[in-house]
Length: 433
Image (cartoon, rainbow, N blue to C red; front, side, top):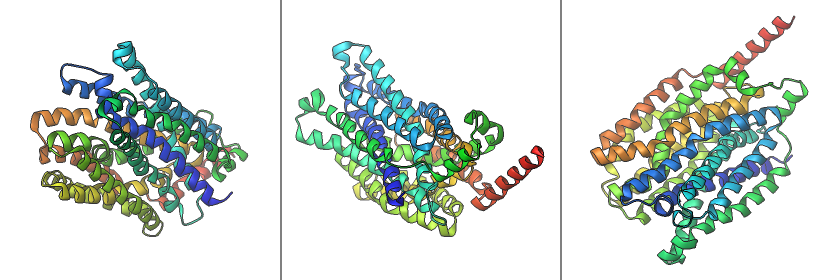
């Protein structure tokens, strides 16, 4: 199996899954708050709409358990096909969903249900894409391979936001609200079909094949994970929480924060987001490659520490003008978070043995993501009470980053993890004798 096809399969599916997930996030403020959550108070409509956005994050741990079980029992490939079907089907249905004016309360109920399906699908996609890349990686290039599917996040976000922006530009306001916004959701059906075709042609990963041939398949992966690796699940949650809140802010809530509280136009805010994502497309593979030579742990800690030091200046400077907003998005999102995210998938996967790796990796990451997903609700309340205060918002981010920094310092490196796993196997062999 050609490595290039494996990487393309992991990246293509990841791009499309994140396209759908972030397309919903962009449509939340533009469309859903008006068409599905009408209220005499626009702030209440926006809050309700962002609750459904957070619901997608809340559902992701469910997906990590369901698809983690499938991935550790049936194989990575089978699980990744089903995540695409779940995401594509729910996105297409959103594209034909009647509005509140047409069917009343049934409209927001159905919208929330479809958003939950999106979250469940994405909860299984991320870990599987990482394993598809890393478990096929040649020796000494696991960090680089693990960084490739991570590029799906910035690509998916930009394409999702751009698709709505393009449709908005090509239609009048009334046309956009009537039917234009539905086009990008319906288009996802075509993209998902393409990704399924690509993934259906790949073979199962060598690591899973080895576990299956040896009979070392966990009966109930989630039980096995928490029986032997519960500390690493908690470690992964804590390691992700710190950058997770900043990630959600700078890639989702920024559009509201910059336009509502800082007075920027939507075009300016969207340009800043695009600049950050474009920078990530360069930084992610670079840091992934470097992690194979100077160590993933070192890059991860460095990214967290620098983000901690710059997060208050970030909130202070982005109010000074569009140029500063662009620069800080490039530095904080594109470089620092790019460094953290580039190493995250590979780093977390190295915490778990192959027979429960899909489950352990996914549950740890997605529980943290679920916590971070409700950030917009808290930030909305903070902004209403304190305004765009650098110390309030910066202090919030610093609290989470402190936890991640402490845990990362005491995190075992990949070499130490190998020793631990070997000791566990030796201990098991002695018990069997």
